[in-house]
Image (cartoon, rainbow, N blue to C red; front, side, top):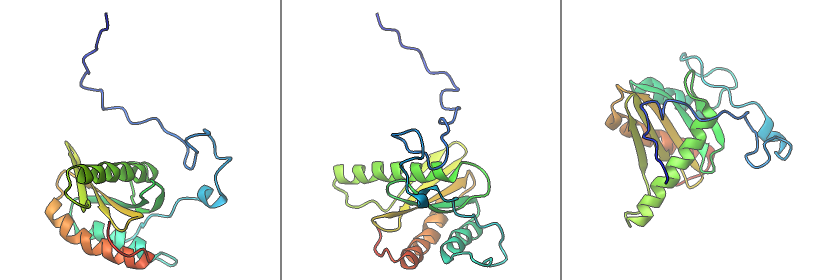
Length: 178
């Protein structure tokens, strides 16, 4: 006889197991990765007095979104394959994890849209007890994921994020929203 254990209140309290940044999922190590994949992750925006020397316009856009919309904790720019392109996170989850979650969330939303015959996905928002995670398609290859706390006004975020996604697409020369 098979017994099933009822999930307790702490089932989802433990985070996913950690892996080292850049570690290959199939090999368990970094030996098969190209040198550029092993480079240090992008430096987050850490000051709001305008762009710092050497800071890219993309990072400025990510930081401006956080400053314009109350409740936004930060943003991640990711490839649809889950690779991290850039971020504006100071505390909280690892940017690499959010990039992977953005790709997974977007893939699930895209499949829902296809299955339901409702067209291409525009955005997908996950609303949890303590906040929000919203993923936007910047292009067919790039995603914008925004992490917000529980006081985030999602409608305001949608209004502000759409032009940010368009400007990022122009800056990255990837054109067209997903």
